Image 1 (cartoon, rainbow, N blue to C red):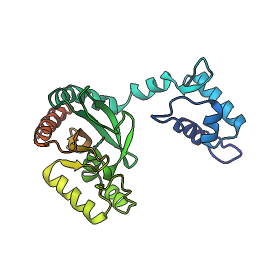
Image 2 (tube, helix red, strand yellow):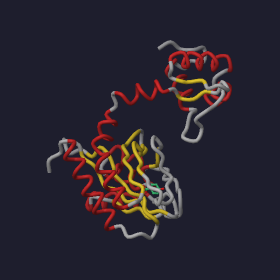
Image 3 (cartoon, rainbow, N blue to C red):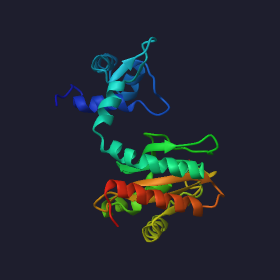
Length: 250
Ligand code: PHB
């Protein structure tokens, strides 16, 4: 890929531009994008213009820029995440309607838990998760499941730290994390009270594909002091159904 005078490739610049968009920053001016992406103003205007022309970004009436539907279309069309989400959806809806608490599906992505889906009802409580948002592996129930069943390399990389505290309950010590991961593998689930948010308890179970490899975590976010037995029962039952539809035979 051709390099600019600053030495970064076209792909690097494209990624930096797209990464200036976040769940809470969905519209920006071209100048703001340039500043946040570390691009000179003329380059930022040119790159943004090209991306708008290609439909990957869109310009609104106020000339502010947002992510284009074409980007969503291309990314979603052939995504393996879509197959997983479709396989999981009926079971997730059942869990959500029975528990009436947030129900979510996450996969491992670049050493974090990336959320593909979150179902919530009007009576569900607090939740820091967003669809297409990420949470740290050591500080969320889904993340801990993905870490516990992840590769040795992944585990050692995360255990090497830093294990940043999110709340006072977050596991920040490598030995404690190692023991927690062993417990998760033994029990087949995790209960994470207040690890990422004082007022909530995350509970999560693994989901296996047809080869038996853990490819996702299914979780519920409950009020901090809620009983977890029913949620765990529902999550395990849902995980079995999803695994069956993915072709996993126990
Ligand atoms: C969790 O998975 O542990 C979790 C996620 C979101 C929350 C609380 C807990 O808001």
